[in-house]
Length: 109
Length: 116
Image (cartoon, helix red, strand yellow):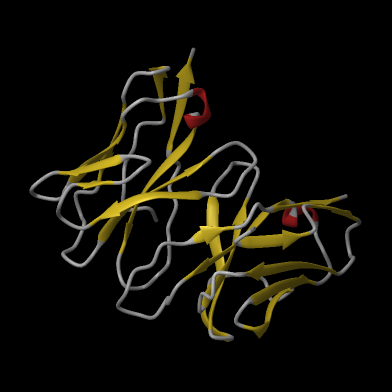
């Protein structure tokens, strides 16, 4: 079973920041928070991951709370091509990715 | 250059047939995976191989048999296909996959299997 809770769906206006929340209250010390997304009819795509510190790359930023029980993925300037299902996954050493239902993000013109 | 490729992209077949899906990765990764995404869009891992050795085998019917001829390839053979096997199958790979580490996984484009 997925160890994360995400809203089922969210909307965002094109050009605005999209903030996708994720709760992972049972995360353990050696588990990372990973974000993937799946654009319609494509394979899942890695976005970003982190352990404790906030992370930023060319795609997004990941903000992890100090207690590590929740996180937020930020797409700073959402485009129509960012419309996808976003999966927040907690992953430890077992290597098994457990996908939940994710958040369906719709970016509107 | 395609990192993780799968063939075929679409596969339509009759119940009872045997079919194979091929996967290749050119990333030099040691670990490869097969996932199944059903009609409700749930994505679940089926198998994982590390350097041609099976390391994850979820509860999958034994009609499904993965085969890894080398670490760059992981093929999925399905015997006696059933209606419930209709789904999208994704192959993925990661750098190490050894216990105690975490690795980003890179997914292929998927194979849509339809069993009639």
